Image (tube, rainbow, N blue to C red; front, top):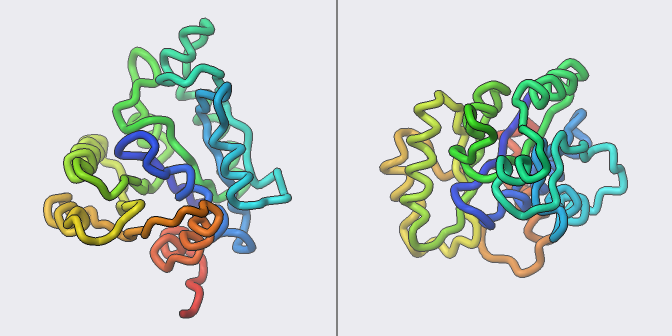
Length: 224
């Protein structure tokens, strides 16, 4: 059983789109599913529904239900507290182990960054560590992203997380961010720089066909 945890170095950088691309890449290659354990902001939209739309999947069973869902578009711990609830890592882990025992390969989309608090004791990094997933860090190729990614990678090393690569979205390849991350990222590399594409479905198809993401999943590479 394989799990790939997709998380962002910042907000609105494209982790839902990357998750959709990974899911689409895995179609037809075993039991591959999308799962967002903690979903906030459902009053304004759902990442789960966006993945369903972007992939055009008719098989809803490939998109698993969240463990926690909150309407408020705010940090998960605060959204939970507003409704008198607490996010429990054991509850998420139990559901994860159920999927693991069923042999599912999971594309897991995170909520917030590594230091997004889930409760008074644990951060999202603790959840990733507990699940033992490989991690893809998503950032947008813009001013400031080197700092954001390097801080994320340093934090990941403190938790001994397995970073398999960095994906830079909306990349024109002329800012030098990719080489800077490769140079100072402590061994973590930018595995994919994705050019701007106005049509999100075309973008997801581009991601699904990428050799780099297909290698992460362990599915056959599409011949060029």
